[in-house]
Length: 133
View: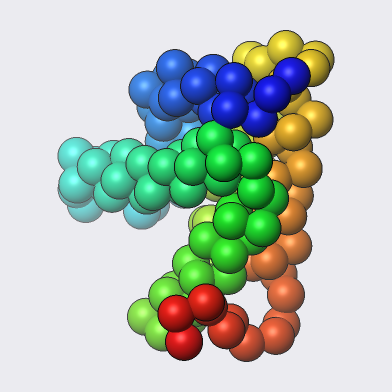
């Protein structure tokens, strides 16, 4: 299956996956949602939007490196704000689980390879050296 076609499938599932992952975070970390559930759900939706936009863009141009670059940039952004990467890693793993159950057998391996590359980039201890630096 062509990478661009998989990207289009991912775009069609964006609403569903965003709500599914937000609900999973709510179940796993209810204490985070206690004070202001509406705001936290909005933040989760926004974060998922960024992750999905990077993923679909990488798929549509057929570049695993593009998604890895996004993950490295995300890691630096979170580190600079003093935020652990745990939730980003978990979001990528949840995304993989969702797509394993919602995409065709032909489409899933491509998504899986991109998400695994993103996870590896988040876990990589080397400093980010983006193309614009």
